[in-house]
Image 1: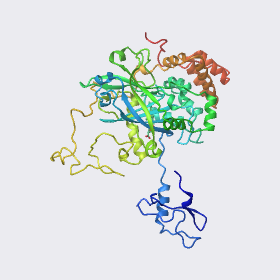
Image 2: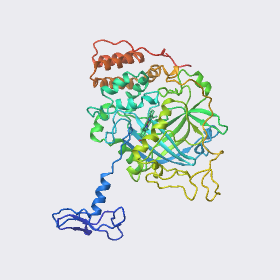
Image 3: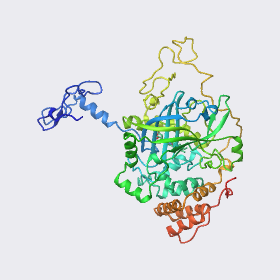
Amino acid sequence: TQFSDATVTRGPGGETHQVSEGGVPVLTTAQGIPVYDDQNSLKVGPRGPVLLEDFALREKLFHFDHERIPERVVHARGFGAHGFFEITDPALAKLSTADVFQRVGEQTPAFVRFSTVAGNKGSADVARDVRGFAVKLYTQQGNWDIVGNNIPVFFIQDAIKFPDLIHAAKQEPDRGFPQAQTAHDNFWDFLSLSPEAMHMAMWIMSDRTLPRSFRFMEGFGVHTFRLIDVAGKSTFVKFHWKPKLGLQSVVWNEAVKLNGADPDFHRRDMWDAITGGDFPEWEFGVQIFDEAFVESFDFDVLDATKLIPEELVPVKIVGRLVLNRVVDNFFAETEQVAFSTGNVPPGIGFTNDPLLQGRNFSYLDTQLKRLGSTNFTHLPINAPKCPFHTLQQDGHMAMINPRGRANYEPNSWGPEKGGPRESPTIGYKPAAEQISGDKLQARGDLFADHYSQARQFYVSQTAVEQLHIKDAFVFELSKVETPAIRARMVSHLLNIDKGLAKTVADGLGLLEMPKPAIPARKVIETLPP
Ligand code: HEM
């Protein structure tokens, strides 16, 4: 319904006054004081000066002045929606004690935020970029976040390189641009000096980074995680989301036009689909493997620049995710949601992937800065939906403090006053693992082959898809002004596919073909049978 124009009055200056009548709530200050006039500040005479006494004006400006919070340091531009997750196959129940896997058909509330990585909050949706695919499952034993991307591998192997990668990918520090493009010297400079990024470079030059919409994207947990069973034994697992609609992308010249005509193309698509009752759905799949597979695999399962080919370990579909509700408020939910790879419930465990371990630190750390208080878990979007009882107290904006006398334990107080206690039966226990070694800064030997999977990805593409990859390399590298960086990229491509390298070199007009980059480790020509 619309506000009736009949109730509108004009003030002496011609300004519009809409007055509260017929049950319409009265506008108040944040202190609940009813507002008399929201069009004119308090002045001495109609032509001012304005009086400092006007507390409604001061409060209104004060609050507005502080509306902005820092945008995410990466994945700043995102779009979230609510839905549910359910298990459709009981296979995981015996491999993991995670409560969320135990009952087929039971719905677990979910919140998903899709995002671009490099662009700032106001950048365009259809930029060539990786897409974030972050899922929060509000399980009955706490929140489980699968903070993934739409590409199954990552640029780097060790978290110590993440700030460098992101500095190089985002706008250059002197000029402040480009805001959301892969095409610039710093980005390709860093990549060309980081052979570990070559597999990911192939994926980002493919159609995967130009999704038709969020609804046509796969999602990947990327790292190897663990499922932990009742005996404490663990099995390795990779998590997958497969869109029911299948995969679709746009081509580059469509992307360029879309970004100009409608920078909100992806978020509008998601909003329209959900509000129109066309609920997007993903299958939840797992690749499960054990130590014997780890030993037989040519790559290290702790290396996030490698995937486990689905031919070797098929993806088993065990659940589904449906998004069926848009947010009530973008800021409260999509902006304030805080995901972390470190949020895992009992039955899910980490591996020693050095990228994952850095992430487990970084998310909590950044969220204190971004959301401004250790109490960001008190915000409804971040709070668990199961009973929870901590002994944490106070801090900025504390809304949930321990009740009663006990804010420490052990204590002498009985069940009514003594507060929560630890649980050896259901409490979180990591998988047992024997670790020993020298303290050193190094990487595992199997981390060193940077080209084999890049090649496998390229040859797995259809002719049209390969053409798109070639065109993308030529276009992106043609924006690079420094000849040495272009040549260095071609020297890597020579180790991936000679035809690709030649097309790119010709497209860039290189006068001389560079020598192939020297691989750190022999490139594996074929997959193991
Ligand atoms: C967001 C750090 C690698 C997926 C973020 C944020 C940080 C961060 C600080 C902002 C979080 C916030 O403000 O709430 C890192 C570090 C990484 C890393 C240090 C490597 C060492 C990755 C990888 C993936 C990924 C490998 C995908 C598998 C995401 C997603 C978001 C995000 C999806 C957005 C979450 C949201 O929608 O709120 N990351 N990241 N990140 N990261 Fe990472």
